[in-house]
Amino acid sequence: MSERKHGVSRRQFLNYTLTGVGGFMAAGMIMPMVRFALDPVLRPVAGQDMVQVVKVDEITAEPKRFNFKIKQVDAWYKSDEPRSAWVYKDEKGDIVALSPVCKHLGCTVSWNGDPENKDQFFCPCHYGRYEKNGKNIAGTPPLAPLDIFEQQVKDGYLYLGKAKKKGA
Ligand code: FES
Picture (cartoon, rainbow, N blue to C red):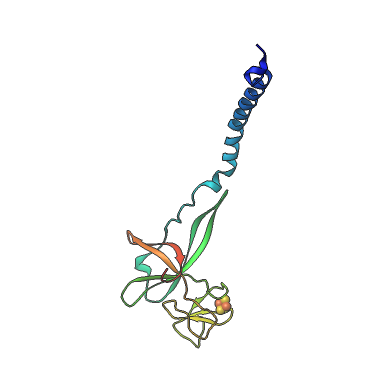
């Protein structure tokens, strides 16, 4: 009986088998390396944790700026990123935590920074102004209100999370 009758010669059979086994073994060695290299990219992005910022007792009706750090993970790089917030209690006693980042071009706003416009947030870069609740004042460069931080009060402390667009 010739090898031709079977459709696949002994030589071809050996070639297919060795190629298959070799490919399987190579994949077994390469896949863990690829997985290791890409692991931080493939991992789902964890939500930013709330960070303890200030004792609730220290928050007054006058906005005060508080600095804090958040843990940030960008693929392989971990860092403590500085943040700050303007924090105060409104007329109802609710805590408000506003981002100091101007919505025009990203300068830092200050409270009562403009002597001619009291009780407002002021951006010195292009004279942007905001009301105490963060609303941008018409006729000044910013076209949106200051972002507001996610917040939580626990054990007498204020915790802040991400700054989000007002109403988002
Ligand atoms: S960056 Fe604030 S007004 Fe332009």
